[in-house]
Amino acid sequence: MIDLHTWTTPNGRKVSIALEELGLPYRAHAVDIGKDEQFRPEFLAIAPNNRIPAIVDSDTGLTLMESGAILIYLADKTGRLLAREGEARYRALEWVMWQMGGLGPMLGQAHHFLRAKPGAAPYAEERYVAEAKRLYGVLDRRLAGRDFITGEYSIADIACWPWVSRYEWHRADIAAFPNVLRWYRAIAARPAVQRGYQVPKPAGEIPMPA
Ligand SMILES: N[C@@H](CCC(=O)N[C@@H](CS)C(=O)NCC(=O)O)C(=O)O
Image 1 (cartoon, rainbow, N blue to C red):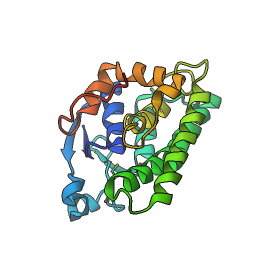
Image 2 (cartoon, helix red, strand yellow; image 1 turned 90 degrees about the vertical axis):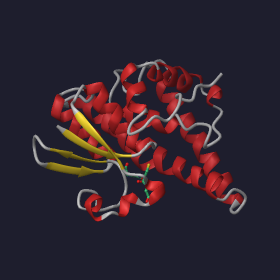
Image 3 (cartoon, rainbow, N blue to C red; image 1 turned 90 degrees about the horizontal axis):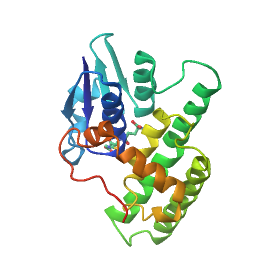
Image 4 (cartoon, protein in one colour; image 1 turned 180 degrees about the horizontal axis):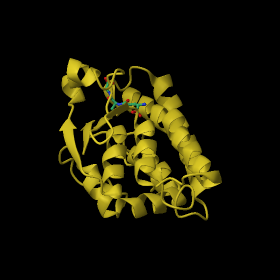
């Protein structure tokens, strides 16, 4: 059994979606970051960076923070969603790292400046909206002629998709990126993604461009 400590955010949803896709039994525990629950000592014991998500796998005794590491762990535990070796493995890891080091942090900054205190830092708003657009361009080119980021559905898609689902927050015109739009819709239609999106509590419909 896996205990997942999470909240209704892109980094949290990566893990609930992966668990749903893999059919692994898990219990979700809500860590309401709006109420600073990520600073509770019992959470810090498994997630010393005070950020969700984190897991405890009672099969192995392993505790793990950082969504990218958790995705790799779950894929390796089951032998699914990530090739065991060879170029396919490293290509998927390359795009997981792209998400962890680029897409997630940059979109997160866009959300902060656009939503937390709009108008307080116009240069930052402009910079992160422009960076979001650049990253969408990168993803769109990668998806040209491919159903998924590495061809086959993998943890690379699961890492990126929840961030793109906040396209309204970072003001991305997703329709201007037709490959991203096709990929976004295809993943949103997966039952496991629809279930994982609503963890640890119902969060409404998945955003869908007209
Ligand atoms: N690199 C980390 C980032 C985790 C992260 O930023 N989590 C956010 C929610 S998406 C959080 O817990 N924020 C709480 C805070 O900022 O105190 C990961 O991918 O797991």
